[in-house]
Length: 451
Image (cartoon, rainbow, N blue to C red; front, side, top):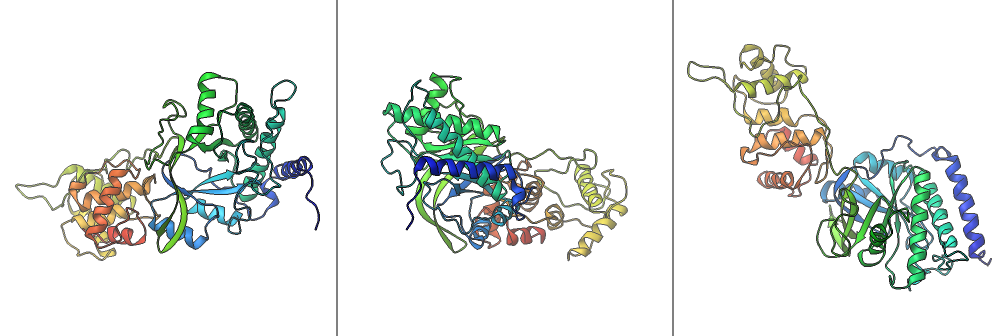
């Protein structure tokens, strides 16, 4: 059996290979999708991480049944527990991103020199604690630079594009050990500097009371001395699904630059698939936001309730604002060509009748609440859950308002806690899985006008 190369030589070889891969870029792998979205991007919601990237069938089951929309994946680092990742391929990455998953690519390389559990395998390095002749911890900084190059090479090979956040996992250590702490701080500073040079966002995961506190103290006590990560991932198992902890000051990495791992390793089962995970809450980028949208040059289509519409009589006329919303939405479907005048008369009724006939409703002069639901929910059927954002969410929020006026959801385009509550109530009434996730069965019920 051949003897492993010395650490310094092995590290140099690894760095040279990583530089070569970065230089070649993602084009070296035909399976890599150059148009993958930046990850995790703008997002506020729930995530999980697991040592081994799950199978595609497991990811699909958890997408449609679990509350999670982000997943941590270990892409590089000699000290990671799951060095072998059989499921983690460029196709896997592209597929998850296309389905709406937010990915958190993690590197677990050299660890703090005073961390007793490392080296894990005997051939993996720890961060060099020697301050050197000038006290600048050059060896630790060189390691941080090399690890960033290696992480970017791994990310590019998988199709994780520039602008995405790459996370360094620095496990907890003795913060009182000066050389251990200072070398780790220089290592992470070099990691951040090199990632920025290569076009990626820097993230650091660590325990609240060691690595994260170290970074926060450096931010406050030695401003401008170190390159600090753009985003932090706080390990604090307090069971609170937020991004706060008493270990660090509340003004750091706020707003929208924090993740908190609030529950440690445990089994969860969603869609009959069990995985051992850590739970996380994310608030990154701009948070979950939906672009503004307009309809028919400014016609209001968002209402807290949607009314039955009938032809005018001597004593009653249909609400003009509601009729305008109907006319606009039917025009967008190519069924109404008249003026958006708020009058519920023959041209509008004819277009409404066409919709009713096409979608299996009773055809008549009255436009009903089930008709509203069908029209409002019509369109694509992506999986939506807490943290999802965009025009598809607005369709769900409008349909829920039509289904039950007491919902009175603000049509923000973001699945918030209020939207999740309304969804769960609707699913319960319809005998669906009460998950707060909009998937196939919930879309079907909304589009059928089931109230």
